[in-house]
Figure (cartoon, one colour):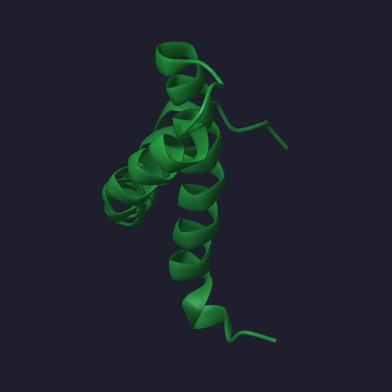
Amino acid sequence: MIPARFAPLLFSVLMSIYMVTLMTLVITWVNTGLGDGFLGRWWRAFYIAWPVAFALIWIGAPRLQRLVGKLVRRPES
């Protein structure tokens, strides 16, 4: 098991891989079709986008979670 202190980093890695895989696949498909060279075009889009998405999630997720906590009404006990 991975120590709990690595949870934010692991979340960022997994979320960015999930998100970038699907987004670049769909956008590459829509823009260029599924013809010859699709996997190469998709891979290029993926490896350019993944580090950006990872950094944005790693930096932004904690701030966004705090913002959501402020915006959501807590149930009354």
